Image 1 (cartoon, rainbow, N blue to C red):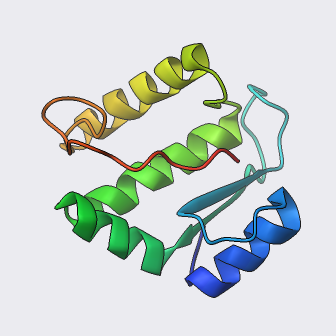
Image 2 (cartoon, one colour):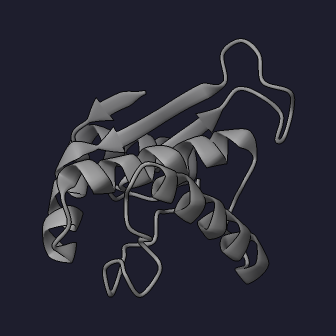
Length: 122
């Protein structure tokens, strides 16, 4: 896991995804999707400035937002995605369940922020 700044995140996002802008989280899996877990799983890179800005905009704590995007990034590492509605519902459900087990409100539900930022597809 890497916590970086917006400039470095923008460079990674441009080089690996062709999107010349910072993003909140990037995941770089080193395992096949849904493969058995062993060894190095991959990298999750978070842009601190973006996370701080998003958390402030949403009126939630940095720690809760950071935790949400760590969970989101690791689900990408494991093979989950949100490119279509069905995948998004499955992934968001897992995020919500994991976050609830950590005492963090559902970022997509009525007890969470009204307009959570959608983590960028990786």
